[in-house]
Length: 313
Figure 1 (cartoon, one colour):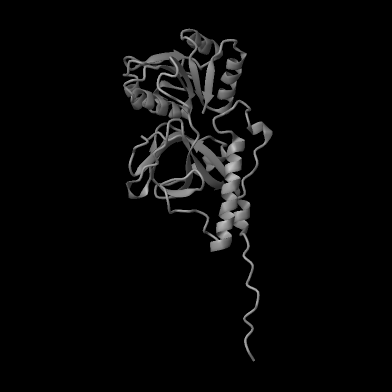
Figure 2 (figure 1 turned 180 degrees about the horizontal axis):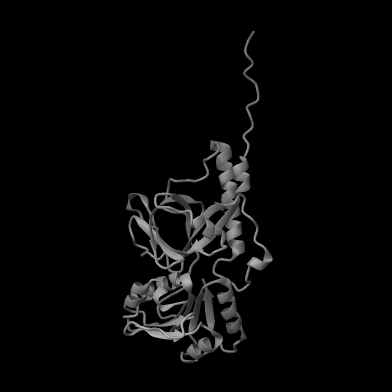
Protein backbone atom coordinates (compact mmCIF):
# COMPACT_ATOMS: atom_id res chain seq x y z
CA UNK A 1 0.00 0.00 0.00
CA UNK A 2 1.42 3.40 -1.01
CA UNK A 3 2.35 5.80 1.78
CA UNK A 4 0.16 8.89 2.05
CA UNK A 5 2.42 11.90 1.57
CA UNK A 6 -0.43 14.40 1.73
CA UNK A 7 -0.73 14.53 5.51
CA UNK A 8 -1.11 18.12 6.73
CA UNK A 9 2.04 19.56 8.25
CA UNK A 10 1.90 20.56 11.93
CA UNK A 11 0.82 24.21 12.18
CA UNK A 12 3.46 26.50 13.64
CA UNK A 13 2.43 28.24 16.83
CA UNK A 14 3.81 31.06 18.91
CA UNK A 15 5.35 29.93 22.19
CA UNK A 16 3.90 30.86 25.57
CA UNK A 17 7.16 32.66 26.33
CA UNK A 18 6.76 34.86 23.27
CA UNK A 19 3.11 35.60 24.04
CA UNK A 20 4.13 36.65 27.54
CA UNK A 21 6.63 39.11 26.03
CA UNK A 22 3.89 41.22 24.42
CA UNK A 23 4.47 44.85 25.45
CA UNK A 24 2.10 46.37 27.97
CA UNK A 25 0.21 49.44 26.81
CA UNK A 26 1.08 52.44 29.00
CA UNK A 27 -1.61 53.99 31.15
CA UNK A 28 -2.67 57.63 30.76
CA UNK A 29 -0.87 58.40 34.03
CA UNK A 30 2.46 57.28 32.54
CA UNK A 31 2.38 60.03 29.90
CA UNK A 32 3.31 63.47 31.22
CA UNK A 33 1.72 65.24 28.24
CA UNK A 34 4.59 67.71 28.01
CA UNK A 35 5.96 66.78 24.60
CA UNK A 36 8.95 64.64 25.56
CA UNK A 37 11.36 63.93 22.70
CA UNK A 38 10.18 60.30 22.74
CA UNK A 39 6.78 59.75 24.38
CA UNK A 40 5.92 56.52 26.22
CA UNK A 41 3.23 55.94 23.59
CA UNK A 42 5.84 56.25 20.81
CA UNK A 43 7.97 53.64 22.55
CA UNK A 44 4.95 51.37 23.03
CA UNK A 45 4.11 51.54 19.30
CA UNK A 46 7.73 50.70 18.43
CA UNK A 47 7.87 47.84 20.94
CA UNK A 48 4.60 46.38 19.64
CA UNK A 49 5.91 46.38 16.06
CA UNK A 50 9.17 44.75 17.18
CA UNK A 51 7.24 42.08 19.13
CA UNK A 52 5.03 41.33 16.12
CA UNK A 53 8.13 40.92 13.93
CA UNK A 54 9.71 38.63 16.52
CA UNK A 55 6.55 36.51 16.51
CA UNK A 56 6.80 36.21 12.72
CA UNK A 57 10.45 35.13 12.98
CA UNK A 58 9.57 32.54 15.60
CA UNK A 59 6.81 31.15 13.38
CA UNK A 60 9.26 30.94 10.49
CA UNK A 61 12.39 29.71 12.24
CA UNK A 62 11.19 28.22 15.51
CA UNK A 63 11.30 29.10 19.19
CA UNK A 64 14.32 31.02 20.45
CA UNK A 65 14.93 32.92 17.20
CA UNK A 66 13.78 36.36 18.30
CA UNK A 67 16.82 38.54 17.70
CA UNK A 68 18.60 39.49 14.49
CA UNK A 69 22.34 39.54 15.05
CA UNK A 70 23.42 40.24 11.48
CA UNK A 71 23.54 43.63 9.78
CA UNK A 72 24.50 46.94 11.41
CA UNK A 73 26.11 47.21 14.84
CA UNK A 74 22.82 48.31 16.40
CA UNK A 75 19.36 49.09 15.04
CA UNK A 76 16.42 51.20 16.24
CA UNK A 77 14.02 48.65 14.75
CA UNK A 78 15.01 45.43 16.53
CA UNK A 79 16.97 44.29 19.57
CA UNK A 80 20.49 42.90 19.54
CA UNK A 81 22.48 41.23 22.28
CA UNK A 82 25.57 42.93 23.71
CA UNK A 83 27.95 41.40 26.23
CA UNK A 84 28.43 43.34 29.46
CA UNK A 85 32.18 43.83 29.61
CA UNK A 86 32.66 45.85 32.78
CA UNK A 87 30.76 47.32 35.73
CA UNK A 88 32.36 50.26 37.54
CA UNK A 89 30.63 51.49 40.67
CA UNK A 90 30.34 55.29 40.81
CA UNK A 91 28.21 55.74 43.93
CA UNK A 92 26.29 53.45 46.27
CA UNK A 93 23.39 53.17 43.83
CA UNK A 94 24.84 54.15 40.45
CA UNK A 95 27.35 52.40 38.19
CA UNK A 96 28.85 52.75 34.73
CA UNK A 97 28.22 49.74 32.47
CA UNK A 98 30.50 49.00 29.53
CA UNK A 99 29.14 46.81 26.70
CA UNK A 100 31.34 45.21 24.04
CA UNK A 101 30.76 45.75 20.31
CA UNK A 102 32.03 43.00 18.02
CA UNK A 103 34.77 43.68 15.46
CA UNK A 104 35.56 47.10 16.97
CA UNK A 105 32.30 48.53 15.68
CA UNK A 106 30.80 51.84 16.78
CA UNK A 107 27.18 52.77 17.56
CA UNK A 108 27.81 56.27 16.19
CA UNK A 109 24.90 58.00 17.90
CA UNK A 110 23.91 61.60 17.15
CA UNK A 111 23.42 64.53 19.51
CA UNK A 112 20.55 63.98 21.92
CA UNK A 113 20.08 60.30 21.07
CA UNK A 114 19.54 57.41 23.47
CA UNK A 115 19.34 53.61 23.52
CA UNK A 116 16.63 51.32 24.90
CA UNK A 117 17.33 48.29 27.08
CA UNK A 118 14.80 45.45 27.26
CA UNK A 119 14.46 42.79 29.95
CA UNK A 120 11.94 40.32 31.34
CA UNK A 121 11.13 41.03 34.99
CA UNK A 122 8.73 38.71 36.84
CA UNK A 123 7.11 37.69 33.57
CA UNK A 124 6.66 41.27 32.34
CA UNK A 125 8.68 42.89 29.55
CA UNK A 126 10.26 46.13 30.79
CA UNK A 127 12.11 48.75 28.74
CA UNK A 128 14.09 51.79 29.83
CA UNK A 129 15.92 54.56 27.96
CA UNK A 130 19.59 55.26 28.65
CA UNK A 131 21.86 57.84 27.04
CA UNK A 132 25.38 56.68 26.11
CA UNK A 133 28.16 58.52 27.91
CA UNK A 134 30.97 57.09 25.78
CA UNK A 135 32.05 59.07 22.74
CA UNK A 136 30.00 58.47 19.56
CA UNK A 137 33.23 57.46 17.82
CA UNK A 138 34.28 54.95 20.52
CA UNK A 139 35.35 51.67 18.87
CA UNK A 140 34.51 48.26 20.31
CA UNK A 141 32.32 49.41 23.20
CA UNK A 142 29.65 51.78 24.50
CA UNK A 143 28.94 52.95 28.04
CA UNK A 144 25.86 53.98 30.00
CA UNK A 145 25.33 55.07 33.59
CA UNK A 146 22.44 53.42 35.43
CA UNK A 147 21.02 54.18 38.85
CA UNK A 148 19.17 51.41 40.69
CA UNK A 149 16.12 52.19 42.79
CA UNK A 150 14.81 50.13 45.75
CA UNK A 151 11.48 49.27 44.10
CA UNK A 152 12.24 49.86 40.40
CA UNK A 153 11.23 47.11 37.96
CA UNK A 154 14.28 47.49 35.73
CA UNK A 155 16.44 47.99 38.83
CA UNK A 156 15.54 44.46 39.89
CA UNK A 157 16.99 43.20 36.61
CA UNK A 158 20.03 45.50 36.74
CA UNK A 159 21.01 44.06 40.13
CA UNK A 160 21.30 40.60 38.55
CA UNK A 161 23.74 41.71 35.83
CA UNK A 162 27.26 40.29 35.96
CA UNK A 163 30.22 40.87 33.70
CA UNK A 164 29.97 38.46 30.77
CA UNK A 165 26.18 38.30 30.54
CA UNK A 166 24.25 39.42 27.44
CA UNK A 167 21.74 42.28 27.40
CA UNK A 168 19.24 43.37 24.75
CA UNK A 169 19.61 46.86 23.28
CA UNK A 170 18.21 48.84 20.36
CA UNK A 171 18.69 52.39 19.06
CA UNK A 172 19.86 55.07 18.66
CA UNK A 173 16.55 56.93 19.00
CA UNK A 174 15.40 60.50 19.57
CA UNK A 175 17.12 63.64 18.44
CA UNK A 176 17.86 67.22 19.36
CA UNK A 177 17.33 69.76 16.61
CA UNK A 178 20.51 71.76 17.06
CA UNK A 179 22.64 73.95 14.82
CA UNK A 180 25.62 76.05 15.91
CA UNK A 181 24.62 79.46 17.29
CA UNK A 182 20.88 78.86 16.87
CA UNK A 183 20.58 80.03 20.50
CA UNK A 184 22.68 82.75 22.07
CA UNK A 185 22.22 81.24 25.53
CA UNK A 186 21.37 77.71 26.64
CA UNK A 187 20.31 76.79 30.18
CA UNK A 188 20.51 73.12 31.15
CA UNK A 189 18.66 71.56 34.08
CA UNK A 190 19.78 68.02 34.94
CA UNK A 191 19.05 65.78 37.91
CA UNK A 192 20.99 62.59 38.65
CA UNK A 193 21.64 60.41 35.60
CA UNK A 194 19.86 63.09 33.54
CA UNK A 195 23.36 64.53 33.16
CA UNK A 196 24.11 62.02 30.37
CA UNK A 197 22.40 63.84 27.45
CA UNK A 198 23.73 67.17 28.73
CA UNK A 199 27.28 65.83 28.45
CA UNK A 200 26.47 64.81 24.87
CA UNK A 201 25.34 68.34 24.00
CA UNK A 202 28.26 69.99 25.79
CA UNK A 203 30.73 67.78 23.95
CA UNK A 204 29.11 68.69 20.65
CA UNK A 205 29.12 72.45 21.28
CA UNK A 206 32.69 72.57 22.58
CA UNK A 207 33.97 70.46 19.68
CA UNK A 208 33.08 73.17 17.15
CA UNK A 209 35.33 76.22 16.88
CA UNK A 210 32.57 78.30 15.30
CA UNK A 211 29.88 77.65 17.94
CA UNK A 212 29.67 80.56 20.38
CA UNK A 213 26.62 79.39 22.34
CA UNK A 214 26.91 80.30 26.02
CA UNK A 215 25.88 77.29 28.13
CA UNK A 216 25.07 77.19 31.84
CA UNK A 217 24.32 73.88 33.55
CA UNK A 218 22.39 73.44 36.80
CA UNK A 219 23.16 69.92 37.95
CA UNK A 220 21.16 68.51 40.86
CA UNK A 221 22.73 65.83 43.03
CA UNK A 222 22.34 64.77 46.65
CA UNK A 223 25.98 65.22 47.70
CA UNK A 224 29.10 66.82 46.26
CA UNK A 225 31.19 63.66 46.51
CA UNK A 226 28.62 61.73 44.45
CA UNK A 227 28.56 64.00 41.39
CA UNK A 228 28.34 61.79 38.29
CA UNK A 229 30.94 62.17 35.51
CA UNK A 230 32.80 64.80 37.55
CA UNK A 231 36.10 64.41 35.70
CA UNK A 232 34.44 64.91 32.34
CA UNK A 233 32.47 67.89 33.60
CA UNK A 234 35.69 69.42 34.89
CA UNK A 235 37.17 69.16 31.39
CA UNK A 236 34.09 70.64 29.74
CA UNK A 237 34.06 73.52 32.22
CA UNK A 238 37.48 74.59 30.95
CA UNK A 239 35.84 75.97 27.81
CA UNK A 240 35.15 79.71 27.89
CA UNK A 241 31.44 79.30 27.05
CA UNK A 242 30.56 76.60 29.64
CA UNK A 243 29.69 77.17 33.30
CA UNK A 244 28.29 74.73 35.88
CA UNK A 245 26.45 75.15 39.18
CA UNK A 246 26.22 72.02 41.34
CA UNK A 247 22.99 72.01 43.35
CA UNK A 248 23.22 69.73 46.38
CA UNK A 249 19.93 68.76 47.98
CA UNK A 250 21.32 66.85 51.00
CA UNK A 251 24.14 69.14 52.12
CA UNK A 252 23.91 72.41 54.03
CA UNK A 253 27.67 72.96 53.81
CA UNK A 254 30.38 71.34 51.71
CA UNK A 255 33.97 70.81 52.78
CA UNK A 256 36.91 70.53 50.40
CA UNK A 257 35.28 71.98 47.29
CA UNK A 258 37.54 71.71 44.27
CA UNK A 259 38.99 75.03 43.15
CA UNK A 260 36.75 76.66 40.56
CA UNK A 261 33.61 74.65 41.38
CA UNK A 262 30.40 76.60 42.05
CA UNK A 263 28.05 75.04 44.59
CA UNK A 264 24.50 75.80 45.69
CA UNK A 265 23.43 74.03 48.89
CA UNK A 266 19.84 73.19 48.12
CA UNK A 267 17.77 71.59 45.38
CA UNK A 268 17.00 73.14 42.03
CA UNK A 269 13.74 74.99 42.64
CA UNK A 270 11.62 77.62 40.88
CA UNK A 271 13.34 80.50 42.68
CA UNK A 272 16.80 79.40 41.58
CA UNK A 273 15.54 78.60 38.09
CA UNK A 274 13.97 82.05 37.73
CA UNK A 275 17.15 83.75 38.93
CA UNK A 276 19.20 81.87 36.32
CA UNK A 277 16.64 82.59 33.57
CA UNK A 278 16.67 86.32 34.21
CA UNK A 279 20.47 86.45 33.99
CA UNK A 280 20.27 85.44 30.34
CA UNK A 281 18.53 86.87 27.32
CA UNK A 282 15.70 84.36 26.67
CA UNK A 283 17.76 81.15 26.85
CA UNK A 284 16.77 77.85 25.30
CA UNK A 285 16.19 75.37 28.16
CA UNK A 286 17.14 71.69 28.14
CA UNK A 287 15.61 69.41 30.80
CA UNK A 288 16.49 65.89 31.85
CA UNK A 289 15.68 64.14 35.10
CA UNK A 290 12.95 62.06 36.73
CA UNK A 291 9.41 62.65 35.42
CA UNK A 292 8.43 64.70 38.46
CA UNK A 293 11.48 66.95 37.93
CA UNK A 294 10.76 67.49 34.25
CA UNK A 295 7.03 68.07 34.82
CA UNK A 296 7.71 70.57 37.58
CA UNK A 297 9.86 72.85 35.43
CA UNK A 298 7.88 72.45 32.22
CA UNK A 299 4.84 73.63 34.21
CA UNK A 300 6.84 76.62 35.41
CA UNK A 301 8.05 77.45 31.90
CA UNK A 302 4.48 77.31 30.59
CA UNK A 303 3.42 79.82 33.24
CA UNK A 304 5.87 82.43 31.97
CA UNK A 305 4.85 85.08 29.46
CA UNK A 306 8.19 85.48 27.67
CA UNK A 307 8.91 83.36 24.55
CA UNK A 308 11.32 80.93 26.22
CA UNK A 309 11.71 77.60 24.41
CA UNK A 310 12.62 74.20 25.85
CA UNK A 311 13.37 70.58 25.07
CA UNK A 312 12.79 67.58 27.36
CA UNK A 313 14.99 64.51 26.91
